[in-house]
Image (cartoon, helix red, strand yellow):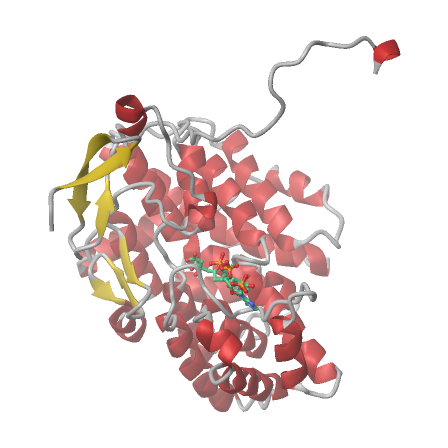
Length: 427
Ligand code: SDX
């Protein structure tokens, strides 16, 4: 592999460095391109452009590989636990037993959310979508924790990580409690992180929540599978906002908003709504495949396709298997699962999907498990956000520790050339 690339414009040649990652990914470093040549590159959606180097997550879209800090997603989802994997993603190494205990103990220090935050949530109508409330509450945390973290100070950064992990989980469940008109619950520091999620969501003052280990284990695995995914839309948003040195809560709030979109994390809710519609209208999966292929129909097969995975999303394989296991263990017979499998089978042999390398992604089966666990559909993307939180924190921390410059892309102007102002009587 040569060490430089030559760009020739009007017989003038420009030499650009080539860099290679630890997994042999190759990039042309264009950071000096405009200074050298006066030209820029253009890449809507950044399909061909890298924004940074990162040591957190490696994925190979052709081979369906996903690793956090070098550990395969299959290993982590099969043998790890969410807080353990969160520590790995954020700090770079799997924690010792003592480090994990210290991490969980410190998270517990911050699980009490300022009571005045309840005034903010009271301002929302019950009908507000939980993701919109979560974005607002996350940003509002800044008001109660105004001191911005000194990323150079390891202890301060560690405390900020634990504070974010502790408070985000609680306010995420408050968005559900608000829609139900239930009182807001408090974290129970005698119980685990994922068990607390279920308690915070479903425990009523009238009766204690009965933990179901099958549910807790399934959620723990799902959160691990969502923990990070390199430079996806919401993570790139967190890095972009953080690059202006906006605080961690403000940056994560922006990430929540980006994740909400149906082309990104909002797809898990859209998948369930699509499957329910197919079921409601008679279960004709092929009719919906035809709609997805019709260029004149804006309908897309939600949960299918991916910007990077052009083979299969390894997370989808694990979640599909988990869906079978969890529903069988819980004794749930959900016709939606059969419709999802029929859609997948038909799409995997359909030329339209095969030629465009469209396979099920992480969102295709996750909603089926969430539904079996009693999670309401409009909370599915909040579940994604809880899982993705360690990745957002890790990427924000890496960007700041690497002292990356403020994100400020260029553009190519295609509007009017200079023109004179006309007074309104002459327009
Ligand atoms: C996530 O980036 C990440 O890592 C994201 C994520 C993470 O962990 O953070 O993995 C999580 O967001 C998963 C994706 C969830 N979104 C969906 O399931 C929504 C449905 N999928 C699509 O909208 C689409 O596949 C995207 C947005 C996921 C990817 O879009 P791209 O890479 O920009 O691809 P494209 O829109 O250019 O599509 C290429 C072709 C087009 O057809 P042609 O114009 O070439 O004829 O494929 C078609 C598209 O019309 N196509 C689909 C389709 N997805 C792409 N056609 C029907 N149904 C679909 N789902």
